[in-house]
Amino acid sequence: MVTIGMSASTRWDDHAEWRGSVQKAELPGGHQVWVIAGYDDVAAMLADPRLSLDKRHSGTGYTGFALPPALDRNLLNMDGDEHGRIRRLAAPAFSRRSADGLRAAVTRIAGVVFASLDEKTSGPVDLIEHLCAPMPALVIGEMLGVSGALLPRLRDAAMAMFTFDPTSKESAARLVTAVGWLTTTFTELVLAKRAEPGDDLISGWVRARDGEGALSEDELVSLAFLLMMAGLENTTYLCGNVIAELLLADGAEQAVSAWPIQRSELIERADPLPFAIRRFSTVDVVIGDTTIPKGDTVLLSIFGADSDPARAGRPSLMFGRGPHYCLGAQATDLIIDAVVPEFFTRYPKAQLAIPATDLEYRASWRSHGLTTLPVLLA
Image 1 (tube, rainbow, N blue to C red):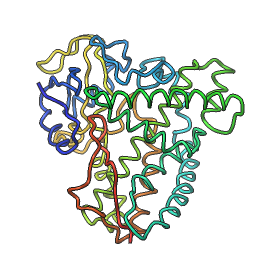
Image 2: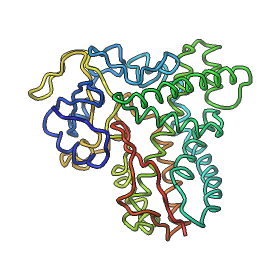
Image 3: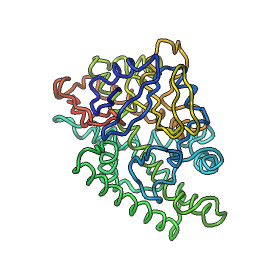
């Protein structure tokens, strides 16, 4: 049986080895899953209705983060009509029709973040802390109506969730504290928007909840929580990984002049998320010579699929495929495009402030992001 570890050091090699057949694997803490890693199978399974995101289909007691209903009634735990109803409320803000407004907001916020970074040229600066985390937090926060003052606590809570180790009492305690704070914070945020609505997404969802009954209170709070946390977590570490990749390759010129040509390959290599969100088989599912029993947990390896030679130029699967395609993909693209070329334009001689071997990734099987990215700007 394959063991899925918490280290990022061999992440691409591990996933490549899993291609060719369905693998039985064990997560930290002992939960058993099935891993699928080839491009054709992963692409098919991402859109296969026999695999459900709803934990109620788990036959093995999967609980994940054991979130309360106020956070758990989100799009990552829904399928079919229920998922479609909630997604339709959120999708317009991330649609192509909204792209111009979103692009303008990203450009404006990038100017503010870089202006702050310009003041830190005298010594090492952590780009995760001062560039990669503020950008998505401020962009998504402005869209939702979430104050930038919450950024430090939101990052701490995300860290506690994505690095959760079920074998560690300390890690479990951090998770409980984080989930409690998140539940209180987003519940109170919704109440504040109800009392004083603004021109933001959460205020709009409150009106849809109160005026049309379009979603429940738990669904409303959960939607705000999911979009804020997913936007912050995924984009922060994708941005950090891309910049680190270019710094390691002395790639300032590549980042500026060749960015439109190289961006897709760089972004795929820097993807922090090795797996798509877990799924549960609603019936016995046969793949090749393997039968995945009804109720078992399935992990679809994005790393294995995107690096598969059999992919042969077909689209990356890092943002998913089918009805669960990532809502924030466009926002992520805009943020990365606004940050990476501009960073190397402003700081063409930027270099790591520590040896490359000292770069440290978070201990997590869910997300391989750098803990810090210390850089000398000048």
